[in-house]
Amino acid sequence: MAVYNRRMHKSFHFFLAATALVLTSCSTMKKQSAAKAPGKPPIENISAQEFSATFHANYSLFLPKGYKENGSKRWPLIMFLHGSGERGTNVWRTAIHGPTKFIEKHPDFPFILITPQCPEGHKWNDEILLGILDSVIATHNVDTNKIFLTGLSMGGYGTWSLATTHPERFAAVAPICGGEGNIGIVLSMMDKTKASALKKLPVWAFHGGKDNVVALEESQRMVELFKKIGNKNISLTVYPEAMHNSWTETYNNPALYEWFLNPTLREAGAK
Image (cartoon, rainbow, N blue to C red):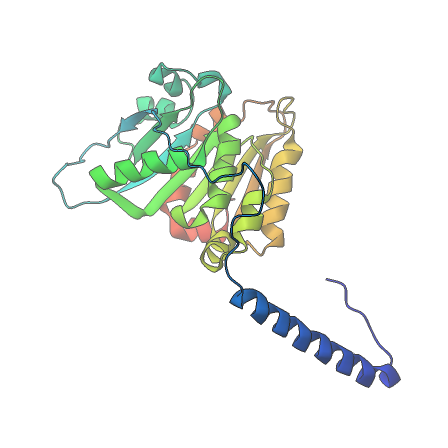
């Protein structure tokens, strides 16, 4: 924000002008707020229409050992978004990479895991993802204070998008080799509740230093945008020699899942 210095002999005139401007602006705002909602414009052959659609989405669902449908325990949940190569109709393609691979070697994985599948030729849709999440929450024993989001490549983009647009829904997020425009941040900063959540949201991003598919600058740019709005709980881990595949090392590291579960680690920032 630019700050303009004025000489003392001009300050009084400036004050009067500023006061008049403020009063005029307030008067204008009151008139605008009192105005009626816009009506139909006087244009021939224009009409209001409505569209509705039903969406179908595949996803895999992992329930941890000890999970009981009628039990009282609420479980933490991770939503994982795959990359472009796993799109399609065979939902088990989503198990090629990501937390599912970790579960194969660590069957005591203490999270509910949702892995949606994006249809061929499409990219992640925030509303469909939230629909899947809400459906699982409604039918399973989920700790809604411990919902985490992560994804790789196209799923990294999806993670940034969903996290910036709906930051109040997640306890922490971990985008891998992704990026995003800043529209989610701009819109969320206009909403008091979302702005507060976005500033506090713990983020641990990952990227390969030699990524030749999604440039490292994509993650760096998002991290800087978060810092500019006052988020102090964001970190970026760069694997200096890694190319696009920065997810295998990330998802094989138990430290990621420990970070998800430990509020102290999240608030202190990833190391």
